[in-house]
Image (tube, rainbow, N blue to C red; front, side):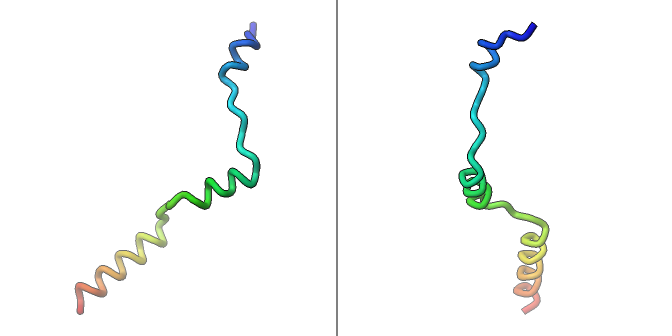
Length: 48
């Protein structure tokens, strides 16, 4: 049987859409395009 009082203690409200959007955009995430650009710049400077 589910203990609702115990489950309520574990509950954390989700972020509002605006707050979630801000949290996502404020993270500095490196993707493959960023890595490829950095590698291309590095090889370009090493060739010069």
